[in-house]
Image (tube, rainbow, N blue to C red; front, side, top):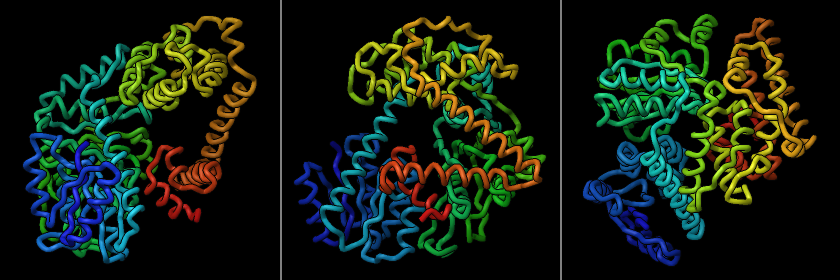
Length: 507
């Protein structure tokens, strides 16, 4: 395993951490200042095995601060977990550390077992990142034989020699970031960085600094100058996911960058030139957002130079078998087990499911099957409850529906009549769960229609807050108030759930 790098000018701190980590069979390498670390990283650039697994750094050292080191490391090694230590246990340091992308913040004096446990968690995170990178490098960029996907592939090919701005539209989980990465990989900027940011996942008051950076002293916690995503993507591609959720005032700043290629850091007075290709994505109807006054029309036209529509998985049912086998192979490799096979009956049942979470949901189902299916051959009865219930409930609904999307999805395939054996697999409880899901979605639609009819202009925020509050409270009840476990069950980060609890007033 690669070593844990410890950076501290205090010899006693280095010694204590080295001994504690060696007792845990974790190799270490120590440094006294940031210059030594940067030189070692440069030397290890050609051999990844010589780099760090995790970096633990003091915040105040002669010759350069830990926050400055953090900023430089994140620009070149965004997946490397960095733990910041400081004897100055103040809020400003903590805010700066987390804004810079630190894995965790460790005040001195620290409890040694807690420090070791924290480093162990960072090691686990680092190894998950490495597995994800290996999967991305080894796997095909995208799979799809459906005509709609072939249209997407042809568009990527036609754009391969262009730097034009692209707007990718499609439902959540349909693979918009994969398309953005493919556009970058097959563009003249392929040798430059690809930087992605989800504008909906970052608090409004931090998003401006994330995008454009800030000068030292620009606000509380800004102890050093920090480069934003535009500067990090210099010479490459910046992917702005969920652009429809960008705050209105920031849309003006983004429009200026797209118009003249210059921007100012927060608190800065000198213009910075941006040599960046922008690719944006959204699951929302931006034309409708423009009509409602939530999105600038001039920015929409700047982004909408070339538009690629990514089809939902229910529109490309013929791709489900190939995607399923691909994700089962990926899951097995990630977990270090023998890949499981899937029967034709199970594939047929999967193909009748509408996949509201699209390709991402299918990938999660394959992870679940790799762990939970009892035999090497996955049968229909082994599929997760939501698929069993969804297939039972949605088939008659889809057949009776006159909605264009549902009709086209049914037209692509004609499901066989269920046998007695397969019908017996769907218990009444599962069918009831599927009916409850349909009722919940119908209730949400009615509530949205009621608010819209009342002339409200805060429908998105109102319903989102209610949805997030109920989701978090339910998860916390399930875990008896344990936030980290609740975050894991919800599939979000521990920092995200803490921030959401504060924003929603759930303390």
